[in-house]
Image 1 (cartoon, rainbow over the protein chains, first blue to last red):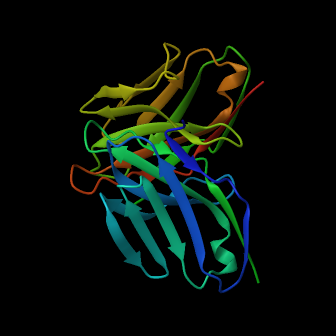
Image 2: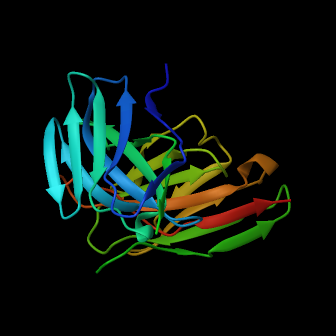
Image 3: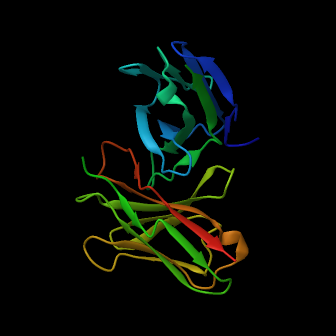
Length: 112
Length: 114
């Protein structure tokens, strides 16, 4: 079983749609959960950071963590064509120097 | 807003040659990382660096790789004898002291080994 699993997509939605992106993981030591956005051939850009379980909202973005199910989600409301990118989930333990483990990324395409 | 910078943006080299990739982490950050991303694959951890020494490294980070913080601002990754399979995007990241555990990534260096 892969440590972090993420559907690679692509996920195509019309402008204005609500987007749901998800990752599952197997390592119960993970405590820190991040979502990064990556445009083609660019570096990952931090979008959301959550510690342990719960929800976090920032503008059009909501991150959810369900540690009991080892499942994390990112919701994008009122999606825009500029949201078209690859979304990477990443996670790390609460110990050590926090090596991040990434999912493969989900490619999102928002059409006008 | 402070950001991580990396140079060069692109590097083409011949197999067996040495390359040095450079990074300037965010000022006052204490933890430094290198990751790589082979085209079409996921981002993979290479090494973490704290207090002037390697704190953790992956299986990928073999004896051909080394890291250094030669001064108060730069953080470098050296590959001594490049292989074809070293072709990838290399990302530097940095993190503040404990509390906010987020890592901020640079734009990457695209390395092509011929």
